[in-house]
Image (cartoon, rainbow, N blue to C red):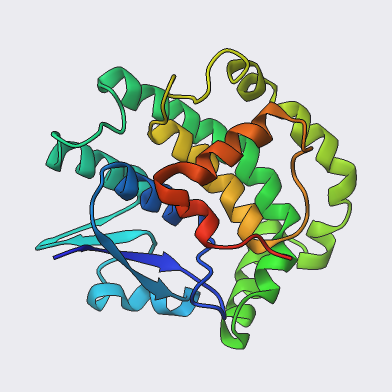
Amino acid sequence: MPIMLYELVGRDKARPFSPHCWKVAFALAHKGLDFETVPTRFLEVPQIEGGASKIVPVIRDGERLVADSFAIALYLEETYPDRPTLFAGKGGAAMARFIEKWSQSTLHTFIGAALLLDIHDCLEEADQAYFRESRETRFGRTLEETVDGREARLEAFRAALAPLRLMLGTQPFLGGEGPLFADYIVAGALQWARVISPFRLLEEEDPVAAWFERCLDLHGGLGRRTKAAA
């Protein structure tokens, strides 16, 4: 029986956009595990598995339910040790924790604010009302006010990617010669932006852009199956 992955979508069920769900999709493919997705909208999340989780991603693997992307990756590594590793040992898991915190504080902070209206516009009407109310409460201002000036902030965001850019000057992936979960953490954030908005985060000649293209090609082009926003 394939693993079930509950993933976040908007009006179009074929366009999952959550960065956390993309991490897990990449991780499942990395492990070579069969999985099926369950498209889930914002207001449907509390109903997952009878209210088993308030967040996505969630996976069902037989009798096991696991929520939270990092917890899922750890579960997959422990449960399927004979398949390709996501961490290459405890040191790799610790490194991935750091990458996750860096990604959330650097990538998510900018992307989440800059693309608020793009996310809102891809949702069903009921989800739009929920999203606007919850995000305007979180940011303390309207979606429009939060997004305003994103072009002016873009250069600072690109500059903040310098550590990643420098590392990719010496190796093709964060994991070395091949990807590890650390790669999927960052790729998930960039895929979030790619799927939800035509707003260009990276310059074409940026080594980070080239690395992301390599990530999109992984696992039979899993990331490319969802087309970029036009």
